[in-house]
Image (cartoon, rainbow over all chains, first blue to last red):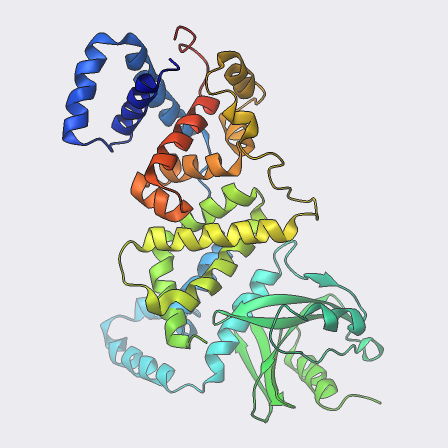
Length: 247
Length: 172
């Protein structure tokens, strides 16, 4: 069994098993198998092992959140329509309305798509073990944690005194780019604040996506999106704290 | 940097192969949370390359990125000890090639085939996962793992010898 010829033949048996054998080699192997019980046994073993591997060993499937995020990325303009789906029952009469709705989607302001992604990311982060990469209530710990992980320095503030304690930070991917996420708590609610560079300035604007509230604003070279199941008024209070920090 | 259009294009290429990507990542890093991170990272990396992607064999293309990402993340974690890299890659397998008793011991250390596969050195484990679970050709496996086809064949052979229940083979 140690001679090179035998090794070569074993690899031929294996290649045959894997459907990788050329015609000439297949003919050679067939002739050899006639006279070699060892190689026939190897072939049998390979078949049994493959069958066992395919039935006994888990073939993992992607978590739903991961798939949802990628699907959202594949069709960013469409996700806005994924709310309740009463359309199905309405029938053909609604087709015109749907066409109109689809065209409206194209006219949505540019921030909308980011809001959807931010909400998807927020939901993903609520899965166990995903909330924070760095756990700290100290802004001076959280801020340096982002050094070297992203190519900008997000401002980090703690508003524990106002009832919005900082609990940590995380690196997320929105539209395929790494984005700083700061994690806050308000009572039992979690707030994710996504911070990314943006040269614009805009006042806080609120919207609701899949039942989550999103308040977005821009200023100081950054765009901010706060996502939470917290009620909008409180989320806007949080935004105000950010824009006009208490002394 | 990539544009949003690239992100959508990449996602459409990657979606049909997402399970394969996650399965490979999961078997390589052996941790569900880290595997998810790896796939997310790989999606980001893929974005950077999506414009140079020519459309042939998206699955191998994606898995190649996932594999690279997985090893990068494992290397990052080296020292964290939470997910140790294989301490002595391949060494314990290589010596069993013509030693039936060692092969027997190798397999019997593990109660199930799943555990035996998880315990294989990464360079052997990845080839078994790609061949047996993902049904990839030698050529694609060679492309994904960056080794010649001959190496794919010999590693696959070593891996299977380590996994198989010892039966025959003693007579050689």
